[in-house]
Every structure is written in structure tokens, then in C-alpha cells.
Length: 339
Image 1: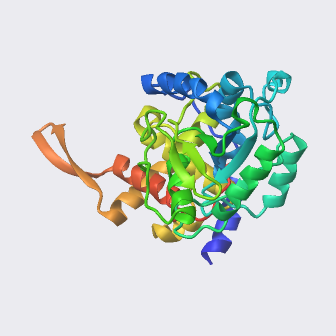
Image 2: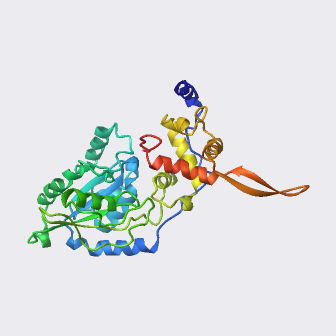
């Protein structure tokens, strides 16, 4: 019955999100600029670049790719909407694209994504979920990388018996998780890089971390990097929703509202059952109020009245918004592809 009511309300949902003239906060801390310099300085010691992204926002790959092209002259362009200048650059390093967090993304059109990538020159693609204790995709990475490296000249590294990779990507897409997953799979060893649910955990290019013994392979972890300016507000909102930008820089309320808009637009109504709503809603205040009541998230506020100051209890909308966003990031609201 709830699903029937939801489908009846689809026509009433927003078809366009009103950003109200907002601009996404530009998050470019000092460690990012420092990290870029270190990454560029280490390029001569690298055999292959492993570019990792969140599979839910694969269209937003241009954010990191703009950096990659500028600093590393990588030519491959994943999706449409890329800057034409990208096509004018030359390949200087072999390149593998990893779309991570596939357990959170709706990859029902996986073949369509791969065809679109191939059409734009990207043929080396791997879908992964690096947080799983056993990810069969990870076992494919080393053989894929070896095939890619062997098809390209190694130049100054031709006599080296070991191989070195550099993993790059925007913040919080799973670069450190990838390294730890490779070590767990190939070396049966624990983690070597810190991981966390917020962007900015890795702040410098680390020393070589061994990820395989046969062949001997090392991987350089790098800080997540965003460009100084994100030109598209909607792209920035998608990045923020997936935890690439710190929540408070954008605002939990606007991120939660964009999440609600995205779920309704894709007819993903699992939030109705999770938070015991009567039906889907396009009103974020109504949804957050219900979440706050269900979770007991309240706050006491002083109010000035004609008879003096009184303390009243109100729903904590910020706490409710945070829970709503967290549920999405953990996959509790179903698999979603934001692009």
C-alpha cells in the first residue's frame, strides 16, 4: 500500500532542485597543495596510476580528472561533459580506473557505464568494494596492472624488478581502504594506511607500502585532492553527499534536502519505512521532524514570552539531518546512483 501511495505522489515531487543561489564551499586545505607537489615529484618513480572514485558519483570524475590532467597529463576521459582541453594532453603513465563502493551504488547499468567509458577512451576499469573482508575484484587488480604496464614503455624504470603504483582520487573514496585490501588479499597482512569516514584522513604522500610479493609491487598512498573551485553547484552537492567535502562547510540541512530530492526523483522510497513515515514527502522539514521524533533527537531552547522566559523542547533538525545522511552513506537507504 505504501508503495502504491508513493507512486501516486511521484508527479508531485520536485523535478529541479532549487539551490537558492548557494555556492558549494571550496575546500582546498594546505595539505592538498603540498600533497600535489609531492605527487608530481614522485611521478618519475611510478609505473602506473590507479585512479579511484566513488561509483555512486562516477559522472563527477571530472573533478579529480581535471587535477590529474593538469599535474600528470592523463588523457583518458571517463564521461561526457569533460573539458575539451583534456583530449589535447598526452598520456605519460599507464592508467587504471577503479569505481569503488559498488555495494552502495546501483550498478544495474554496469555494462552501459563500461560502454560509455570505453567510448571515451577508458578501457581499464575495475569495480570494487574495498571494505569487504573478501572482495574478489581485488584479486583482479594486480594481473590487470601488470598487463597495463607491459603494454607501455617503462623508460627510466625498465631495469627495476619491482613495480610502483600511485593511487589518486578525491577525498574519502577509499584510497587507503584499497591499499589495506590489497595487503590483506596478497600478503595476508593488516592495514598500513589509516581509514576513516571523513575526508582528509591521509594528509601526505606516504613512503612505499608493499601490496604484493609476486610480483614485488608497492603503492604510494596520497591525500584526497579537490580543485580550488568546484564550478558546478550540483556536482559539489553530490560530492558533499558522498562525504567528499566536510559536511559543515556545505551545511547538513542542504545536504539532507538534496538527498531527499535525489531519492524521490529516483523513486527510492526505503526512507519511508526506515523512519516510519506515512508516505514519501518532498518537504525536508517534515521528514527531519519525523526522524528527530523517532530517534528521540530533541533540544531544549529558551523562548522569550510575555510572561517571562520559558524552556521548550524542539526537534533537533541538525541531528536528524546527520542521521539521514549517515544512513545513505552506509547503504541503509538502498543502492543509489546519483548520476
